[in-house]
Length: 191
Image (cartoon, rainbow, N blue to C red; front, side, top):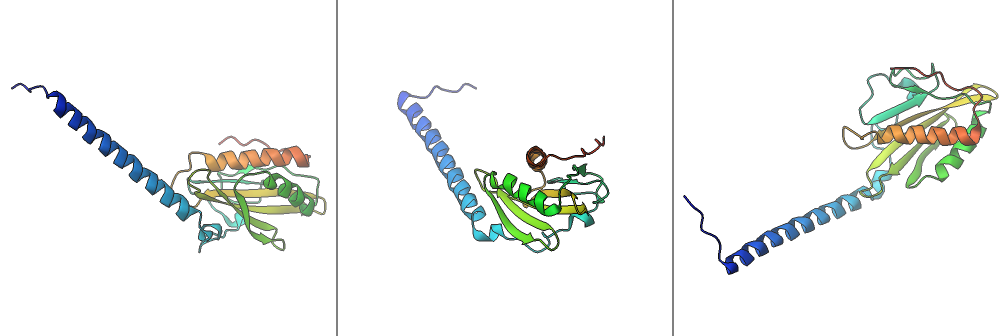
């Protein structure tokens, strides 16, 4: 069985159909991306939903894959947590340094501030589609002039974050250490 070659006019018609299908698919994807961006940009995405408020000290293993936790040793129970440094500062001063660090980050909004429990919650949106990640921060007081920080960053949507929450927490801790100068570095725990 042999296939007859297409006539010159027929080749043009096939090429036009293929091109039209590709353009229509591209436009459909662009409209879908725009719809997702508008949906993720609405005010409802900048509030905690039921079940999203957490106490870091009460978190237990296993944590969801789309999250990352850092806390001072002995503060949280989750085995996946990396340790955070101790600062020779009252927690209020550490919180001032933290505010300085966070103010330099893009697309971050504080949505909960509870100084009585030393807990603050932020939402950072991804750059293109504005997917929200929730970041809970608790300041841990070890004495009048000793404190540390616990940070739990997690994705609101999806089961994998491709390491983005880990990168965020590690980066923010490094920036905090740069401005607040910890006196005691955490011991590295190999897991």
